[in-house]
Length: 208
Image (tube, rainbow, N blue to C red; front, side, top):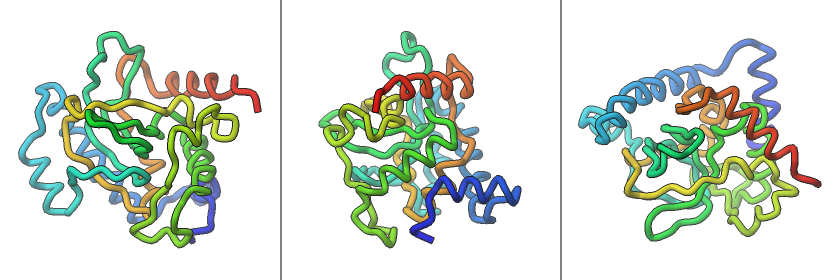
């Protein structure tokens, strides 16, 4: 149901100890992509098998549309000096540049916080029925200050086209929920629990 909150969906999944078949299938498919991406990132290339398999399923695109959600493989320019980074971001692009884009990477939050943030951002959805064409029309200026959307602050990341190691895997609105909770984050230099805890400290320090 389009009106059901993502936080409630997470609570329901935990309560019944199960997730929909579609979500389980998605999780398995995304995990297989992550495994292959490890080799791709090490070689700084994308295997032809990944391109072929994803293309056959209609899942790869080179077109990025702000307000939609995507997975992709990324090898940061400054990874040597970054305290930690995610090789397989789940992003909501909010601003495009000539050399890349600015986006919200939900992986930097605990699953519960991801759900809360996406529920908050739903006020900017242009289609309340969450049809395939739905977009979250939000910009950095609309988030600035982060008093209302404080969980977004540790998630804002700048991505450079040169360091993208795959095309984009689009996530349709009906898949936002399953994608949000897939355990496919690929952090380096710090484990995910530590990353999530640091993100919580960042947004908790913001005064309402």
